[in-house]
Length: 331
Image (cartoon, rainbow, N blue to C red; front, side, top):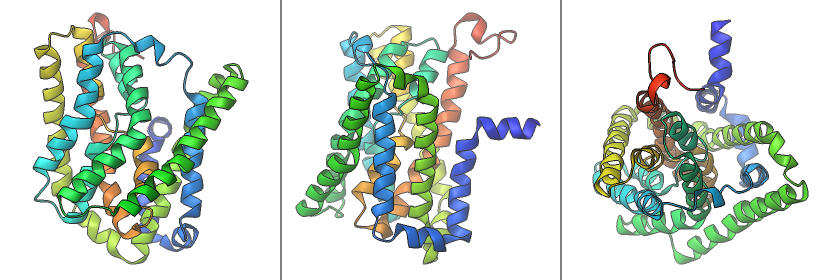
């Protein structure tokens, strides 16, 4: 019973492991389905259709205050973190370094940064505002940043390939998201009642995209070798998250933000989204399937560690009874 409760709570993390394992042991079906990339493209569109449907009304309006906090978080997400990964990842295998650079360019998490900010007693509306803004901007900012860094490391895309990325993003990301927002408006907010359903569809779509992606690498036998080379890069990514978290907290205090805003910066600035990262990188590297599998491994390694550390920090930062031995963690 306890094991089933744990699986229900952490089913997505279990799903990530199962997706990779299936691609190693049973890559054939995924490799056949993934041929041509059309199925994965439709799965990406489903993710953003559901995102448009589930985005709460007023999510942007509620966080418009505290300009210094917003500037700090967005600068950290799209300038400090990419520069940090670019400066420290030169020792990695080129394929994994591409993934680390891609990780650095991604926006913050869509929901977990908000949840951990709230649990830690931070400025939750500001976290929600920055999560929404960074993910909307990240659709176009992340590919540009990644292309610039790849060019600087001698792996840049041709201009025609970058325009192809933007075209695919418009069709697979912006159009479904806009349709989702339109359907949300037509429902007069009733779509918000089904947020759990949309979240589940998004999660299953992401797991499906991952299986298709890794099945290609599993079919030619290269995925096992890539995974075998991951222990040291995983330790590097864990250390990076700790350093970036400390830097975000220090920067927030240095510009004299209050405790609630500093907690928001701590939980929001160093996190990177898996929900947007998988479809975004799948679109960016659609014409390079041999690169895509390596490019996705760093975000898969970074994601669970950031959730674990953020959870510990939120518990210890929570005010009063939430962090006490009696009160337990906030729900």
